[in-house]
Length: 398
Image (tube, rainbow, N blue to C red):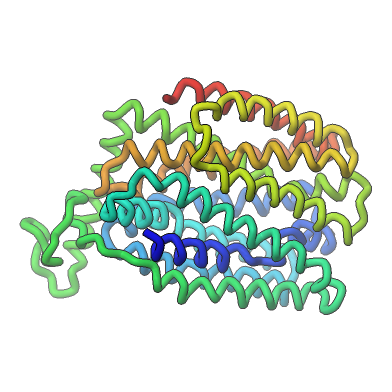
């Protein structure tokens, strides 16, 4: 398990060491985009993921999950290049489509690969701890990249920030290639074919296209059947989708920080504080899961008070809220993986991803509409309502 953990942590760090993260909202507004236009970009990002989540989940369940993880960073690096060297609304939009493609390729595939490797090792109970800590490592990478963003911007402007982001993202390719994957090739119904040959009814086409189609169709049926027939899977899937959807709020943290009156050089530090809170939530992911509902309720109060204060000091309370959200997401993801069968694991995880992206689109739309009459801090404070709803759902999903 240590080998898996080390490579998973390295993968998480390489993926998230992106100095553009705390600055791209400011890059957009600096090129004349309004809050509504920024929200439209976020909505395009989510729409791309919604369209691709299930197809890529099927692909991951019917072929090599490690292969998808190896390819996933490439379109993301291309997105950073567009934003850095051709900044305009069209390039920003194309970049979000590419980022959505990369995210869909890894979504579901990573969770399924890690869980099934842990099952093989007899360590399935460590899933929440391992994924929570890998998310914390990724968040720590964001912290380090955020700390570097200000100096990079001062020395080389956005070209320097973008170049480092591109290089770090490309490092995730060899790291993903090194992840262990020992599962057998899936059969047409989602089961394994240890010898790697086509099963009965797959046909005998030399290029294997009929067999691949049969496997994908079987995996999709298996995944939908699990969601339809098992109420516990359905409840946990919807809960995870809602919690992940709330994570889209972090896209607006730089705007909220800027609205406190903090200067451009201080905004990354405030974003850094929220990111650090998120990392702490990931490190604590395997502890106190039975108190998740109560903790999220407290987080809702912190979010409302901190965001509505309009002061830089209020960011500390926002950081607490995001840390609690990260902790609850890891717990909800572990609950879902425990309830799902192996054959369609990536597909069901991708369905949760579709739900989360749909929730994100609603959130982006609500923010775009609300930005016409309320400042960013007030809009973020209103998200305390969904936090409370998630707390209630957590209590009911046991």
